Structures are given as structure tokens and as C-alpha cells.
Image 1 (cartoon, rainbow, N blue to C red):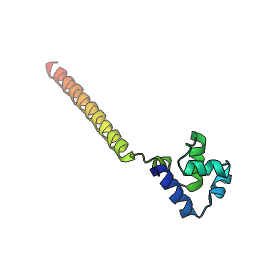
Image 2 (image 1 turned 60 degrees about the horizontal axis):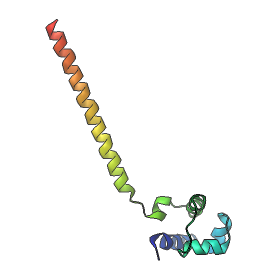
Image 3 (image 1 turned 120 degrees about the vertical axis):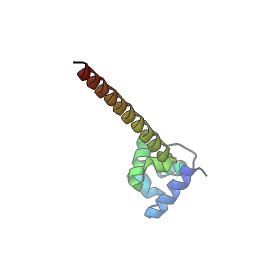
Image 4 (image 1 turned 90 degrees about the vertical axis):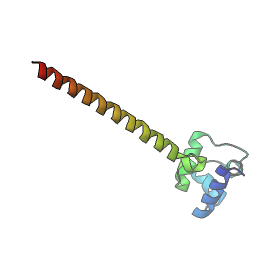
Length: 103
């Protein structure tokens, strides 16, 4: 069973839903939902969004997306941009100061 299927199954049970309950809320047939939960069919994007909403969980969690990696990459990129801006500002400030000394 895939991580997606396991998480879908476990979250459904945790919420106290039957497959039929979830299927009605999505909406889709119970057999379609069962095929998704058991890994025989993949949900389309609309269905995936509704499943996450119905079970009150994130799509990232269902798909086992490592958001920490992305957050770390974003933080690294922001730090690099701030460093670049700061260095550019200091360089410009120094250039202005040098110009003032020659006047």
C-alpha cells in the first residue's frame, strides 16, 4: 500500500467516516473512492483537493511532500537576496562617501 493510500485510509478512520461518507462529500461514487483509497486509481486535482478538505488535511501530507526542504530552500534564497541587496547598498554608500570626499 502506498503512503498516499495509507494516509487516506488512516485519516478517514480517524475522522470516523466510511468510504461511502467521504465519497458523498467529494462527490463521487463509493466504488471510485474505494479504488483511490486502495491505490487502483489516482484522483484528479479537483478530487484530491476535495478529499483533503473533507478529511481536513493538507495535500502535501497526503502526497508525502517534504515541505521542510522547500522552506529551507526558500529561506536560503531569501538570505542570499538580502545579502546581495545589503552588499549592493554598502557598495553604493561607500561610492557616495568617496565622491563626497573628492568635492
